[in-house]
Length: 304
Image (cartoon, rainbow, N blue to C red; front, side, top):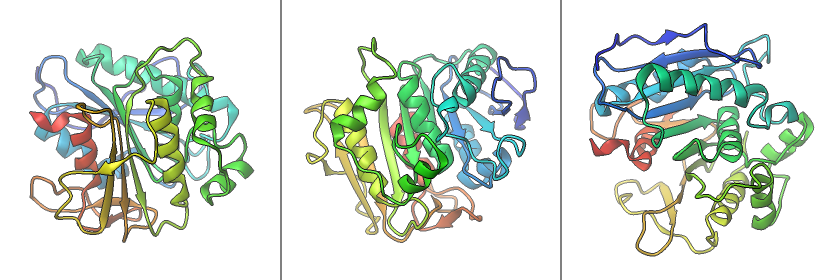
C-alpha cells in the first residue's frame, strides 16, 4: 500500500467526548495489515514536537508501521497535559480514553491495521494516560511502554497526582494490580506486555514510581517483582540498568530501564546508527541511549 508521507491532522473522527486532536503518520509504503503505534506527548508538548523529538516517524519509515498522535488542547488544560488524574478520564468509554479509542478505530479502518499489533507509549502525563489505556482496554493493546510516569489508579485528584509524582503513594503489588483488575472484572487475559523507562535523576516524577509500576504489571502477569533478571543487550550502555520479568522459556512480559544520567525527559541519541535517533529538545536529552528504538524493539517492530 502507498500513502503520502506527511503527518496529517484528522478532524472528523468520532466520537470525541474529550475534544482531543488527532494526527496520523504513515510511511510512503506499508506492508499489508501494518502495526499501529499510539504515541502520547507530555505536558507542555504538542504532537509535532513529540514526533520530532521521539523520532517515531523515522522508525515508522524504517520498519513499516503507522503512528497515531493524540494531542491535548489548551482549552482542556493550559499546560497541554492529558488529564490522567481526573476520574472522568480513567474509564475506557469516557473522556480522553474514549476519544483515543475512537482515533485507534479510525486508523484501523483507514490503514487496515493488524488488530493484534496495536501498541501505545507515552511520556510523563502521556505515560500516565498510556497506563490508563493499558489498564482500561487491555484486550486492545498487544504491548505498551510507559516513560517517566505513575501507575494506573494512583490518583483521583490533582492533589493526589502531585503526591504520586513525588513518590508519596505506596501500595502492595496486589493492591496496585487490583485497581487495574477492577476495570475489567470479566477479562481473562493475558494483559499487555509492558516496558517501563525512568530517569534516575528525575525531579518531577520520582523514580519510586518505577517500582510501583513494576509491581503493578508483574503482579498482573503472575510474576514477583523481586524475581527480575538482567536485560540482555545492554553491555554498551553502562549507565542503563535493565531488568526483565517473564515466565521460563518465554520472552519477557515486563521490562524496566533505569537511566542514571536522565532527568524528566526522553532519552534520545541523535545519529545515523541502527540504534540511534530522536532529537534533543526541552524534554529530550542525548544520553547515548535511544529509548524509542528500545520501545520499538520490545514491541517486535524491529524484526522487519
